[in-house]
Length: 444
Image (tube, rainbow, N blue to C red; front, side, top):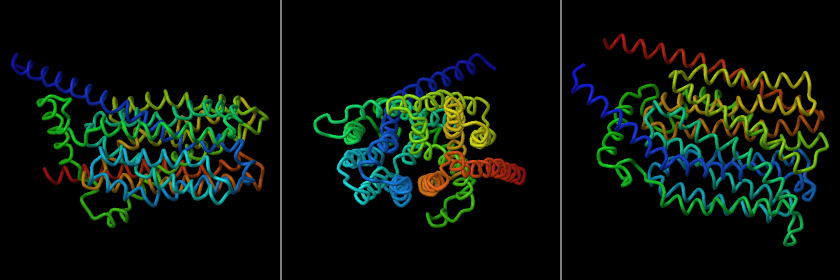
């Protein structure tokens, strides 16, 4: 290469590095904290149940049903929410989502019986619907594909981190029982719901819809980012531009939903039920919260490592499949030993797999879709997986546990789902790779 070519390459690399540094530090920390608040508000019903279930007279099956209603609403409103965000922009829509779910989350403190709990839990799902797929879509507007797995993994570290922080925090709040004449679980919902409202107001000032609107980037940086993202959009050919209804009937959407369902179910089911599983060892609420945080702390670190390795090797299929097989192995290990130390280890294995899977999977899923299909497609995959994981699996766990008294048997359906998902991602990825190679040969 000539000296001029080397200088041009060095300048291009420097421009890319500085642009991505500014973009990542501008939007990612804010989105991580916002999602952390979202997961705390979604999952704090698990810790609240240590007091709330007795106060409201809830059986395990009734509590499981109440928890699952969030996901029913999420399923119904997730795709419409993402389509709305594509029309009005993230700068308006994401604050709308955050403020409304924060208000509803605080209203959980007002429930008086199972019926009012069912209603408010459903409204929470409707209010928050679209936040996660909306952010994944938003990241495709800002982050080139070669950075996407590590960025999505970094964003989704909020899930285990929320439980790592939220479980001890919730346990501590429960110890304030009687303060201001309120039960501990009332205080939990009020204190943990308020940050969503404040973050929603801040989101309007922090977020920009598209790179060309970002005044905090130079014109040269905006041009580089827009050009790079436009070139990538033109290369996406796997799931082409179709109507929303046709997209929802596409077999690849349902296969991707199957793949994601195992990990989604594991994370959702344990966020709701693991506090009660640990409590069954006759622990107090604060100790339960502290022990419940350990698996999520490990998952917070390892999902970042796994996402970075997926980007470094540019490999998605096996990085997704192996984590699903890890979840299945963790569930099966529960049949060997379910002492308290073994339970913490098994929960760690399952949750590390559940969260490490997310970065590689969502990078893979976004790459399988045409840019025009991404809004509805990503939301559909998440909605279907959340419906199965948050409704079917959460209720199945409660019913099996109530009828058999066994937490281990209640976990068994997760193993079957994850094994099926792991096999599906390997087969689907191979078929799409072969199809792409065939198209290339035909073109040439």
